[in-house]
Image 1 (spheres, one colour):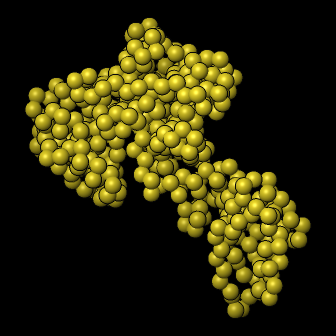
Image 2 (image 1 turned 45 degrees about the horizontal axis):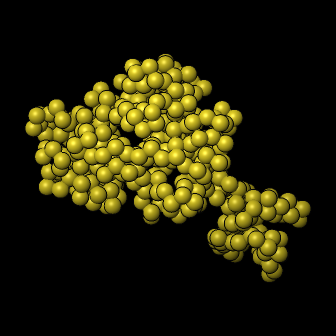
Length: 396
């Protein structure tokens, strides 16, 4: 592997160490040539193909890892991506693979893309490369643990690893067990895609009915069957679930304070430190930062989610009387730090009251709670739709 790309650094982070009263180190997988760990599994699986073409279905890091390895090994690769894949991801995959890679856009949904890739492999004899449910891929991802032990001089006290399909966590844990170097392990999933927690409850992999795809690198509806063979030994209480809104706070902090660009999945392990509290005080902790392929066009969405989670931004539907001065009466209720970020009103000619959609930002969540108290004191009618999933998707 070293002939193809260098080891990623294991760096102590003073900011996180001071905050959590621990010795916190980051395994920086965001610093590989493709800005994620995915090229490790791709390398290990593809080095035994002996010239055979390879295909995968992915719109993200797996596609880029496979494409980069195709160029390094001189293999033909066909990357199947959904038609809805952002152009930036398509362009990066094409740049990594160059003339060795063909990109095919198939289907509006990933299941259609996956079916097309597998069907093409069956017809052409190409090797289908799963992003996580493949023993060679799992073994390749274990190289993160190999490097960690070498760089740290042994295992940490606590290891925090994100889980999506389970390839990385299964590879690392399998290797550490074999070496007799197992630290305490905490696995981390996004709250909207906790497929490992569901599998541990049922005793086998299950398919989640709904998945929040915001953490696109780890929000997987079903844990891989092979990874679960390794991870089924993990105690359920050692699998943490991170709320997407809080994760956005962590992404912003790492960018603004540390200058580290992390994708949502790449920040999972760091965010989970908030839940560990006294468990890690005074101990050496390694967090695996799995990737940094962050599209900055998503930054407004990250900021929005972070503010809503922190309570510094709220959306209300107000029932306002249709009379002159009614809006002025409401504006006088606002505090000195309250800022209107959105306002929509349509006067109804046949009604005494109209509805107003209003978004308000503040520097302190207490200010917005005080605003609600003042509105209640005047008998105003409103509905807080900040966390309403349906209205949030359709309106906000």
